[in-house]
Length: 197
Image (tube, rainbow, N blue to C red; front, top):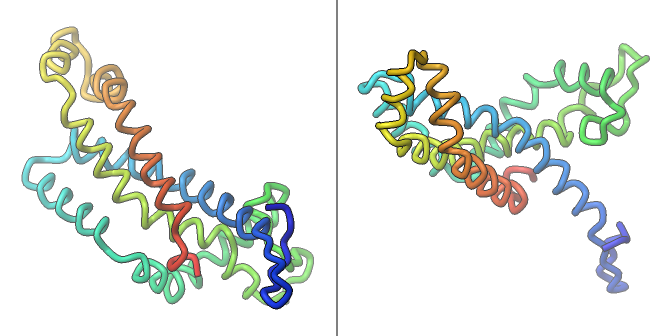
């Protein structure tokens, strides 16, 4: 658990580097995916019109069923080239945070290769976040939709707006679903290998 060497010939195996990378990628994934999934779930269950709601539910469920290799290929061919600027900016100003630090990056050299930013923890975390967000959203949406109608109507009767009703009734009622969806997404993020590779 403490060594980083991986030498199969001498039967000396260490997983410290792999374990650290796994935890950092999962942390980035959770930080990005939870607000995205929470906002999407609240929009679908509370704000979207009925016709759009059915379409969005089907779309989110379809995205949850996409294999991880598809997300990995999408990240490789599309996302990496689009996120270089953001990754460079984050590494320059917030590189002191471990999961935003990019090894081999030289901020002072304007002609430095951008390839060091493409295979970073940040990019892998974004790909994993977009992969686990539909699963989290499905769990959260289902719990939010089960909030008691009497309490919703009571909040409206007391003069609450839709945002106030969501804040005072739906979110507290769905707290367990938010935690459950987050843990389910974290479990998939920790076990993901294909998309990260």
